[in-house]
Amino acid sequence: MAPILSIPYDIFIIFGEYVDDEDDFLALRMTCKEFNEKFREFHLKSIYASRRLFYAPQSFENLLKISKHPSGINKLVRDLTICWATPYYKLNSGRDHLVLEIIGSAHTHNEEFDDIRDLIFDIAKLAVKGMKDIQKFQKSGKEAEILSSALKNLPNLRSIQIHRDRRQWESFSRSEINLFFPGLEMTPGKRLPKIPKAIGYGGHTYVLRGMELVAGPLHMERPAKSFWQLPLSSILLSEITYLEMVSCSPMDSNCHAASGSGVHMEFFDMSPDQLASFKVALGNLKSLKLEIGTLRDAYEGRPERMADLNAKFCDWLEAVGSNLEELSLRRGFCSDSIRHAHTFPTKSGLPKLKRLSLKLVAMYRLNLQQFLDKSKTELRELRIEYCTLEHDDHPTTRWYTVLQYLNENCERLQKLFLDPFFEDDVDLDENSISDDIETPSFKLPLLHAKTTGDSIFRSCFWNISFPPPDSIPYTAFKPIGEILRRPLTAEGFWDLASDRKWRFHEFIESKT
Image 1 (tube, rainbow, N blue to C red):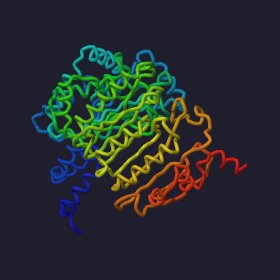
Image 2: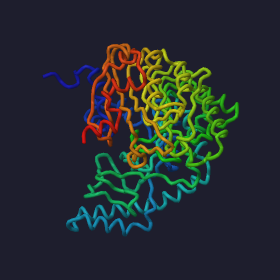
Image 3: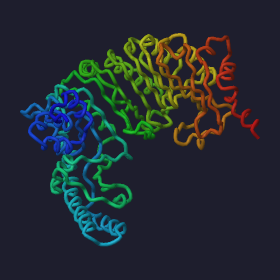
Image 4: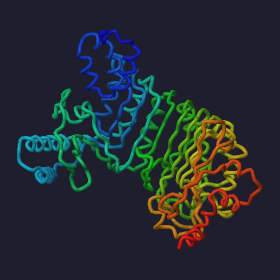
């Protein structure tokens, strides 16, 4: 049998890319001198290639330290995730409650229980000081200064993801636990004691879950929009120009967006000089994922203000989008999202756009088509979900016209998901549609198509179905491209596409 060190280096590369735990790499490097040399680079990449920034002064200072480290580890950082969560908890008044929870979940008071109790006390003690430090850090206003100083010394940074979701919990790695809770002394190989059930405080903040220490959502004293302005302001201050991906969205793409979350439209109300700075800083972006947030009723009776902000958003998007290949746009739900239609840029548009995803966006059909005109020869993937179109005609005609446009203009489209939604002066809520909207006389089906060929409109059968909670047990595969080329009315098209099942009441009555 050949010795393990005779394995080709390509195998070590594959193995190094497969292992993603820094402790596992450390164990490999401690095996022998040869392994230490072969896995050193992989080990460093596992630690530094993707970094997370939590809202705590230690996290900001640690990133700054990495960016200025003389060893060159700053050159390994490629992805930065900004988690709008805090590693500390207001537990100074909750220790007894937590211990009572532990007692209630323990069968007997043994050594394991003592370890968990002591751990909770240690965490609570460190958290009290940590929360005070965070409050001081907030008041100092130095976040952008520190973050921009770090960014300018990360020459290979390519993506920044900004995560803010009040229901999302972040699990810490061992090195992160040591950074935020140094008193726990999480040495290599040491694990947190296993907790029988999730242990929390006040029913809201989970401290321990399984064998994980988790971070809870950060409640800011300043406006929620600052969570987006901090990284963007830091990017401008750092004067970096090499980012390829910026994402501002919930961590779970399926979770429901809150009305005040996301990038507020007021953010795009900027001076020409600021716009020019963004054009330079984000001019190399290839992927942009945005959640647009609007405070409920913020523009009630002020449609001209919303129109002005829409125009400024279009200017901003065109300024940073000359090289953009992927755009994901989602509106944080509120009544204004429906009352005020969103417009897309149509001057230069996004000429290199290949993938477009829209969710919870109210749109003008003509504006959408003019926007797609600028990238129709490049567009490969399109997803439209829970979006509405203007009310100048019947919903069946609106969405049929959109499909006709795609068939005639986007000939290289290889993937499409279309939820042809509509609403009748009611609030739109994707999590409670059946409760908020009276059952209409019709329901348009979901259309899903995917091909490895040139176009979904050529020799491709589409999946046609009705989503829950509709009681229409129907799924079919139809040659939609061929049907679209027939001389049909809108109703005639939907009849053929869904075997008349879109006539909701007619179908239900036939079953009773």
